[in-house]
Amino acid sequence: QEKLTGVKGAKVYITSLNAEQGPGIELLDYLTPNAGRDMPPDTQADDLWHWQIRLQSPELAGLHQSLVQANTFVRKILSFQNPYLDYHEAFLTRDPDGHTLLITQ
Image (cartoon, rainbow, N blue to C red; front, side, top):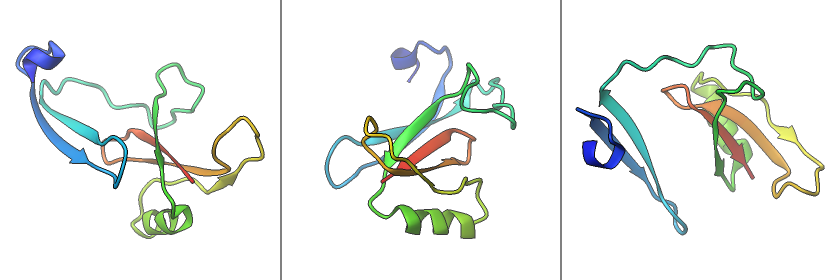
């Protein structure tokens, strides 16, 4: 991994997720170095350091309910009437490391 990222001494745990079609994603968990800082808990979408990953789900309401029942950080489902967006419902959540995920349908 050190050769790929240029991070000296990098040791990474990689989890792959694959959909039925389209590209997959790899989640990288850097075991070393581990000197990164957590994102501030009051981070908002308009902060300079904010970054989110968009995932699309055909079962938005069911996924949302599962995350609520699991007591994870999850915002309510919002509906949009913007013709420039290719989705009309979405919610925000965070993965176990605190990365923001935008889940759309």
